[in-house]
Length: 290
Image (cartoon, rainbow, N blue to C red; front, side, top):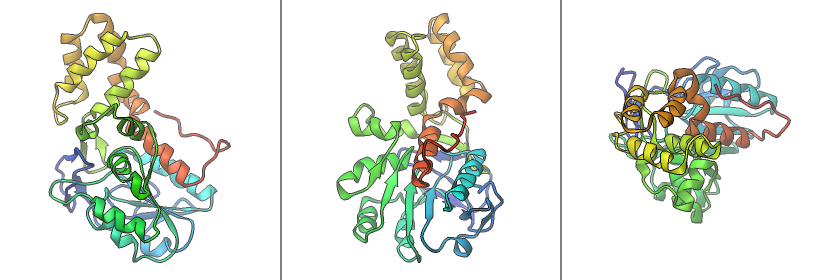
C-alpha cells in the first residue's frame, strides 16, 4: 500500500491490498492515539512516543488506519490499561515496517489491520515469512491484515473476523472488496467498501427484511460503483433508482452518518481483534457500535 508521507490534506485510499493515504510522522499524541502517528497508550490511558513507553512484555503493536475510529482507540486504550498492557498504535503497515519490529526490545504481539499500497510498497509475503521465522507472532484482521493472514496462514500467521473468514472460505475473492477512500486527517472513511455492503445485506437477509434476490440485486448495484465513487449519497441514489421501493426503504436508514459505524464490518473485526490481543474476556465491557 502506498501513502504520502507528511500531513497533506489529500484524500487517502484503502486499496486492494490495504490502505493508501497520508502517513504522519512519529510523535506524541493525545489519549485518542490518532492514527498516522506511532503512539503508546498505557495503563493511564495517555499516549507518548513508542520509544518512551513500549519496551518489554505486555506490548501490543497495532497497524491501523480507517478500520478504527478515534473513539474506538480511546476505549481500547482504557481496556489496555485495565489489563496492564501497552497498546502501541502505528500507521497502516508498509514494506519493511515489520522487519523493523525485530530490532525493537522486549516481547510484543503484532496485529495488522490496515496497510498501504501504491506509492509505498505493500508489506510482502517474504517479509512476513522472515518475521514469523524469527519467532515474532503475527496476526491479521479487517483489511490488509485479513488478506495477508489468509495468504500466509501456512507460514504461521493467524487471522480472525468475518472478513478473514470470507476470504478464507473463498466466498469473497477480490482484494478490491476492502478498498475505500478516507480522510487522511483522522482516517475517517469517505466511501463504503464492498465488504461492508456484503455484511449489511447478509444481516438484512437474515433478519427477513430482504429476500436473497433483493440482496443480490442491491449488491450488483453497489459493485457497479468504483470504490472511489461509493459514497453513501451516491450509493443511496443508485439503490433508489435500480431497486424496488421496498428494498430501498430497508437500506436507506443504514446509510445515515450515525448508523454506518454499527455495520462497518472492517471496524467490528478490528475492534474484536484488538480486544483479543489485549486479552479481553467476557467480563470486559464491550465497545458499543455507534
